[in-house]
Image 1: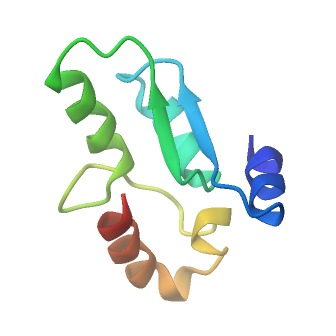
Image 2 (image 1 turned 30 degrees about the horizontal axis):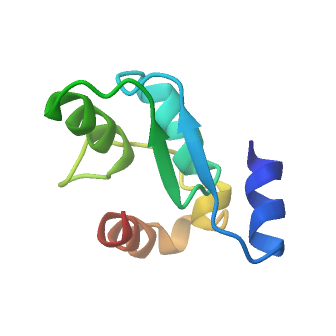
Amino acid sequence: MEELVRTATLAGMASYIRVPDAHNESDVRRAVEAGAEGLVLREVHSVDDVKATANAAYFLPKGDRRICPSTRSANYNFRRFVEFTERNNRVR
């Protein structure tokens, strides 16, 4: 997934990743940590489905996402992690 996101970025394209299960926090986090600019959800039946996905995609205080700051989406840089989380919560 990360290689596809990187390829899309190099080609000047936005990267959207389809998440198999809106309630699976691991799927959502993997997509966002790979650098996806957006998520495509399947079988959304209620507002709660969207809220569960957003909760996994946003950092505190907007959501419950926690990760190691050494990821591609954070530019592998823990020193700017607070700045990264603030930008993440603003953009998504």
